[in-house]
Image (cartoon, rainbow, N blue to C red; front, side, top):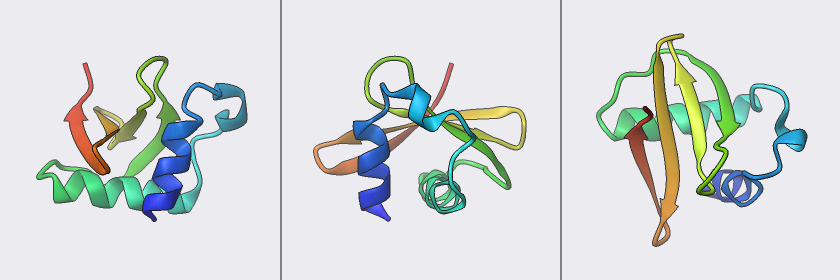
Length: 81
C-alpha cells in the first residue's frame, strides 16, 4: 500500500493521468492513513494530486479535505485549507 501512495506522490504533478477520483485501493489506503492520524473520514469522495509540493488532496464526506505528504519515508496527514 505504501508503494501506491509513493507512486501517486511521485506523479502528483501529472494531473492528466489522474483525471478520475482515484482507484478504490488508493481511496482505502488514504482513508486508513487519515483515520490513523486521528481525523474523521467515513467516505472518501476522491484523491487528487495537489498542484504543488508533491502531495495528495483527499476529500472525505463531501466537506473535509486532507493532504497526505511523504516526509522522511513516513506519510504526514494534515487538514487542507
